[in-house]
Image 1 (tube, rainbow, N blue to C red):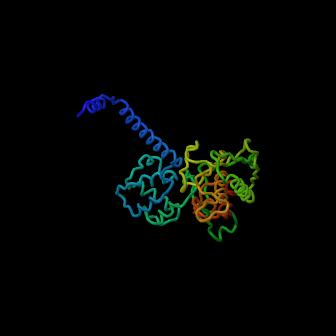
Image 2 (cartoon, helix red, strand yellow; image 1 turned 90 degrees about the horizontal axis):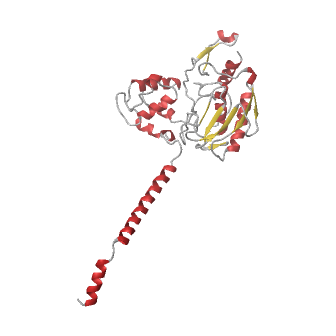
Image 3 (tube, rainbow, N blue to C red; image 1 turned 90 degrees about the vertical axis):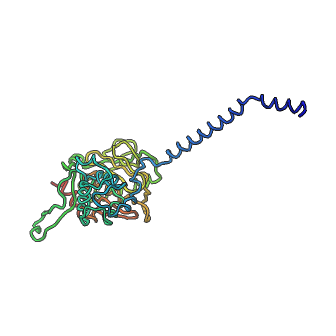
Length: 330
């Protein structure tokens, strides 16, 4: 080894390690920062209000689960049933994955309301019904008795008629001084269906106007109105958050609240294909709630809670008409 080789080796050994260490540290920090951005982005891309409501397909895996079993997913079934009024207030805190007596009782009440075979089990018919998109208003709101016999004419002695319309407890209604109601549109999010919504709601109001004492008039944008309609998503400030695509389609409030919200995450149309929801069909239903009607057990009625994708259901039935007359003609 000559003099120059020894000197080169000596210089190499004396080179400081700081630049190399700094480079490694910089690379490591860049990697951490990139991972943080990816995680943040993945959280941002989740739909607002994302939870089990986005899809109820998990229900299919619970078919024929038996009482006494503990199965993941049953707590979500309980939450759904509780949301729609099928749990007594004392049982609402026990929403576990146990198939207990309270779940069996809630299922029986649900099956009875939808005129299914009352088994108390998660059978095929019950799961199929629970998976159909629906209104977010509870089926049972401390309501008055359902399926009540009516005898509105002298013919009542000749036949026994059963109506299925219903009202929330207290039968909230608009006073006679407010039979001319104004409505306006105010959304919490932008939606390409805004103009279609306006047209659909106008048609829906006309349907109720034709069978009742009410008159409806659109108010200028930004003005005060009795009824306010719009698109919202996720948690939108009314303590009743939407759940993303599927399940809950819309909700509205009893008189004299006046709020009517569409879930912006649904695929809406004024002329729906088999995978879309009809704006006007849902509007006619929600206006029924705005006027004071609860859900009907008549599957043909506008006020029936569920509506499959692609369905156009805009015509008021006799049950709907009888309900609005019973509420306001007395």
